[in-house]
Amino acid sequence: MNLLWLLLGGIFTAVEYLISSLLMMITIIGIPFGIQTLKLAGLALWPFGKEVRSGQRSGGCLYVLMNILWIFLGGIWICLSHLVFGAILCITIIGIPFGLQHFKLAALALSPFGKDIVTV
Image 1 (cartoon, rainbow, N blue to C red):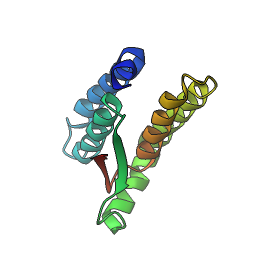
Image 2 (cartoon, helix red, strand yellow; image 1 turned 30 degrees about the vertical axis):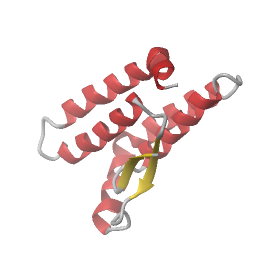
Image 3 (cartoon, rainbow, N blue to C red; image 1 turned 90 degrees about the vertical axis):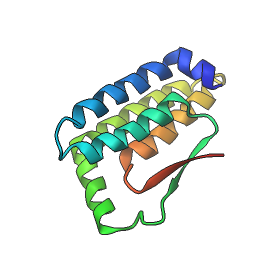
């Protein structure tokens, strides 16, 4: 499934995340946001067999503040785009697994700080 994901658009999503991550890391203030975008790129590259879980310190004040900044600086648009792609893919039976992966990416795109990606 991961190979089909790559061939049907996953590689483009991962490259977009990688480019935006590198652009964010140009400034010192953007480095934490760039690291989170790298997390999204890794999941977008190979999403099947991975799960997003809350980290041990995910309820900390810094994580909450960074997630709020993330939402206002573009996280909401990334989340909405994954929700739209997921809904479109879930129309067909064949696209349901790919749509579910977009929903997983949407959840991570909404609040990436304090989340860990683990292999199941």
